Amino acid sequence: MKVEWNKATWYSKILALVLFVALPFVGFYFGVQYGAARQQVVDNFLSVNNAPSVSSATSQDVNPYYKNVSEWQTDQNHNGWSIAYPIDFDMNDNYSSTPSDDWRMGMPGGLGLQFFTLTIPKAFEPQTNFADAKLTVGMSKNAAAVAQCLIPEPTEPNQIPTSTVTLNGSVFTVFHFADAGAGNYYETTSYRALHAGACWAVEYTIHSSQIGNYPSAYNLKPFNEMALHDVLDRIVGTFRFE
Image (cartoon, rainbow, N blue to C red):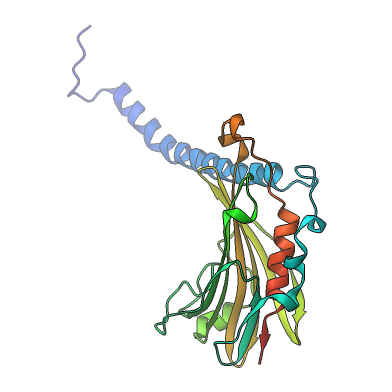
C-alpha cells in the first residue's frame, strides 16, 4: 500500500488527537520525575555526608585554639556591631556601600549591604571531602527584606524547622537549608534578627563534595562536620550589637 504522507486520513487525525491529549500529561510526568530525581540527589547527600555513622570524629577533636574565643581576632571596623574569628581564617570587611542582592546567602528579599566575609579554607579539614565554608554578615533596611526577615524561604524545599537563639542579648531566628548538584553539597545556617529597623543576617554555608566521586587512591575521609559546625557557631556567637 502506498502511503500518502501529505494527505490527512482518519487514522492520522486520531493519532494527532491522541498526541494532543497525551503530550501535556507526558510532560507533567517527566517534570515530576525530574523533581523527584533532584530531591533524591539532596537526600543522598544528606544520608551519605551527614549521617552520624559517617565519621566518628566529634567537636572534641578540634585544636583547642578554635574553642578559645578570647584568643581570636575581633573585627570592630564597623559602627554598631562586632564579631570575633580565628586569625588563620581569611577575612574581608572591605564592603561596597552600593546595595546589592548578595547581602545574605539565602534567597534575597530586597537589596542590602554585605559588611563582612570570612572564608574557611579546605586546609582546615585536609584529606577529606570538605571543600570550603563561608560566613557573612549582612544588613538590609529594604521594606521587603525586613518583612521577610524572620520567615522561611518560600522557594527552599530542603529546610528543617526554625529555632531561636539569644546572642549577647539579641534574639535571632535560625534557619537551615541545603542544596546539591554536580557532586557538590551546600548546607546553609542563617541567623537573622530585626534590629534598629533593619534585617540582619549572620550566616554560613558549608561546601562539601561526594567522596564517591574521587578515586579510592585519594584516600579521602568524611570531614568532621560536627567540629566545623561547632567552630562556625562559636564565631556567630561572638556577634554583638554595640
